[in-house]
Image (cartoon, rainbow, N blue to C red; front, side, top):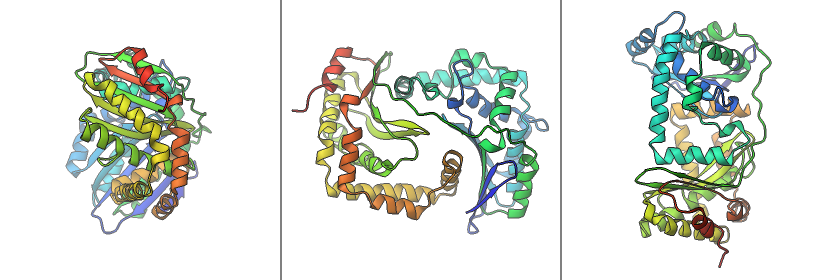
Length: 419
C-alpha cells in the first residue's frame, strides 16, 4: 500500500492489484450522526443522498447515465462516524468514473427543489425502518445506553429534524466537515497511478485545511431498561453491556467471546436457544465499537410467547460463560475469526473499506499478519478474564420491542442470582 498526504492534509492511499481488471475509488468523510445535534439530526445521511441529485456541471440524470455508460457501480452509505462514497469500474473507465464521483462530492448543486423531493424519500426510509422490529430495537437500545453522547442520535434523523433541513444547513455542514483534514481517499485494483493522482489533485488539492480534525469524547454507557410496545408479530430483545472503543487491547479476546457465545451456527446461544429449544428465529452477539467507547450486545428475534424462556436460557448461559469456556471452543473461534477477517480482506472492496476506515478513524491500518498474530496470542486465561469483566448481568441494560412483558418480569429474570 502506498500512502500519500496532500499539502492540505488530505490522506490518499493506493492499493494496486495488477491481476484485476477493475478498480474501486472511495471517499471517506468524518461526518456522521455523531457530529450532529437534535435540530440537524440526519443531515450527514441526507447529504449522502443529495450529492446524487446533481453537481454544478451535471444533473442527476447525467450522473446516473454517465455511470451507466461506463458500466460502473456507484453508491454511498452513512454511519454514526463517517460517510463513504464509492465507485467501481473496469480499469479503462475508472478515471471517468472517479471524475463523476469527485464532482458529486466536491461540487453538489444543493438545489432547494431537489432537497424537498429527497425529503420524501428519506421520510419513507425512516418509516420503513419503523416497521422492522430489529431496526427499532437496535435504535431504541443505542438511544438509551448511549444517552449523553451524540452517538445516541439516529443516523437517519427524525421526521421532525429532516423536515427542518434546508440548503443553508447543508452548505454550512459541508463547509465545516467536508474538509481535507477529515477526508481519506482510497484507490484499489488496476489503475494508472499518475492519471489517478492527477484526478485526485484536480478536485481535492484546491480545498483549504480548516483546522477541524476528527476529535471525539469518551462515550458513556447507561444502565437502563427500555420497553417499546409495538403491534409487531415478533418481539425483539437486546441485552447490552459496557464495551470497548474501536482500538482496545481486549478487542480480539472479546471478538472471540462473541464467536463462542452467539456468532455463527455452532455458538452456544444458537445451539441451545435456536437449535435445541426452537425458541428464537435468530440470536446473535456482537461488539458495537466507536471512538471513545461502545457496548456489547446479545440480540434475538422471537415469538412473544417465548420471551421468558429464551431470556432465562440466555442469562443462564451468560452467568456460566466465563468459567466454562474450553480450549477447544477457543481454538475453533480463532479459526473462524481469522478466516472471516482475512477472507473478507481478500475482496478488493472490503480491503479498501478496511484501510479507509482505519486511516480515517485511527490514522493507521493493521495488516493481516499482525491480526493473525494477535488473535493466535489470545490465551484461555485472557478470554475468561475478558468475559468475566464485560459480560456481567449486574451491569446490563435491556431493551424489548413488540409485544413486551411487564418490566418486573424482565428484571426478575436478569437479576436472578447464580444458583
